[in-house]
Image (cartoon, rainbow, N blue to C red; front, side, top):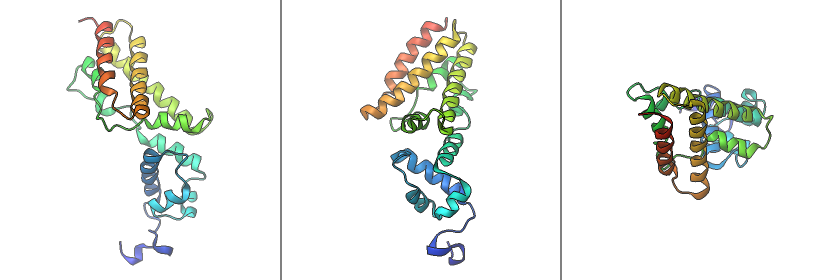
Length: 190
């Protein structure tokens, strides 16, 4: 970065500030949580002043909501949009996650915020509803006898594995995948 691109105190100028703020929020909220991330730290990582941050987001609450809204605009596209897998295989692929998969950001936000009216809480509810709907839609494509029930079961199982991985600090997705296979086998005639 040239000296001309820097503003007061050596901070980067405004171009791309919003994206840098969102990138820093994703990094920090995932690593240390929403409540443990202060705006001073976030601004330092984003290389913006607090004034610039508040010009883009009127409050930390608004920033948290935007972070969640943009975190995963599509529901697991790497799983549900795959055309090389059968619907049954897509259901199972949702549980094929690396050991290092962090806690779902929507669960983390809902737990930390405690306020069901917070905009981020609404995004979390919307995402979790959409996830269950994707499971249900895929279960229907696979020929499940009760796709709504299977969709809810798989969504609950995935969320539980995510939370359990965080709480126990050890991977739970392989166990969840084995349970999912039993649920899928029982729900989808072969």
